Length: 267
Image 1 (cartoon, one colour):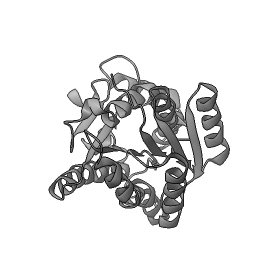
Image 2 (cartoon, rainbow, N blue to C red):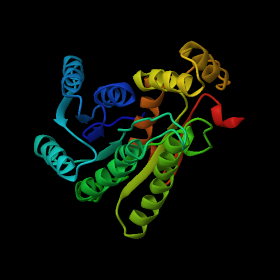
Image 3 (tube, helix red, strand yellow):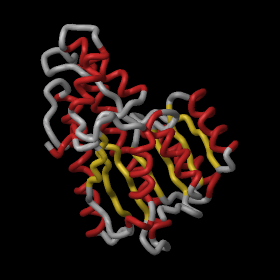
């Protein structure tokens, strides 16, 4: 189940965290993976870990906000592995400030990474995905990293929520567009709850500051209390969902959002 034998996957922002875990898991179930990130040292270390475990991987520098960077990264991937079957738009940042507190520079940076990065990745990967999808039983696949903050409102992070809501509807709209055009490309999103990664720790700190305190342990406990399953998520929880959506086991899914949130949005 959920095998990716013979498939080539490109993951943005995959040097660490959810993206890094997804890259490792994809490689372990048969994919050749390319990791694009601005964190070159960390990205190359993740590639070494994949190769040490018997997988095939490539690191390419990638600034998701720059069209030329995307073009170079995907060209290098196709040259190395012969094509592209899966795109995972994983790169994202978090501001953790309210509408009044965030500067316009912070807002523009948030949009550049969380929205423009997804649009550029989709646009530039499209010809490669179309080519491979045309000869695949279930077509090629795009998996976009959204969030529960793209499904329900956020008291503390409205700007981040806005960008992830955009990713959610962009996913549905591109699934419809590609279907209408006859492209054999499935597009789905995944919506994590609070995940205990480097970025998760960043959210605890930012929320503590927004509440006028430096008590990150208190904000962590608050986040934990909002997950009925009784724990915060870990990167592997989301990586498994990404692999499923990318695999042929999800061959009849497109325009869907997979919620992996420990019950957060069930309340």
